[in-house]
Length: 294
Image (cartoon, rainbow, N blue to C red; front, side):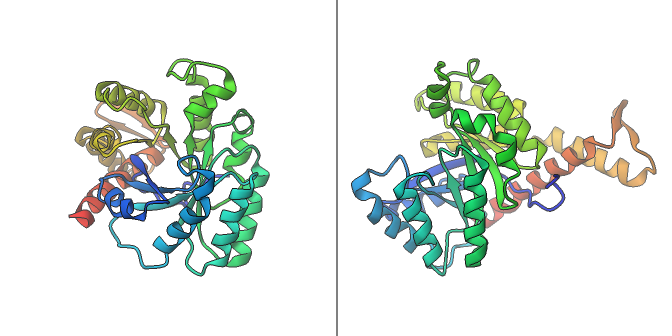
């Protein structure tokens, strides 16, 4: 299945969490410069506060959202837990659901199919973002990625994944897991977002890991503080040279009646065209969003 032809390409260079228990933090997160703001109902909320956080979060979406280029997501609780079921029930009960849900600790594609069917029955067009952070999900990542047309992105959860794999939470030990998630996402035209870098004082290390993730095929990376966002956005924004080359390749193919063109002395085959079009769409989206946020 190929979703590249019918899925909206948009910048997903960075994301930041905003606590559902404290709705006053939401506008600050939206103004942080992140492409994605995720309102948190899962790990960042104590069990005793889950109901209050859920109510506050749904109230945020009971009013129209600004057209500011920021993607809004709510991370609900695991669908295999009572809190997750309560989150889903509340979302199905509302007339104005969040535009997208982030699903943690997924293990099988059946979870995605089940939620998709409930949302469809209710008439909600809510999109889905799936965290791959369990060993079971890593094994079934291709089946998970194709489980629903609602899925826009896979997120790699490195902390939980390292614990499940009994390995050190570092780049090299998790390279296979990251690569497998990227492979699955690319197979179905999905974006793929890397885990946040947890050392807030090591911006150089974060930038280097973001560059490694970008070169591996990731679309973006999470943040734990707004001060990380400018560097992440810079890493995952196509530079002028990349955009210029992509534009030349697209132009050459448009003018040629062949599956091969020569650009800058190099032979380019037509399968490369799709990635060039994606680069141009992201660059245009970045520029458009910058205008909307001014």
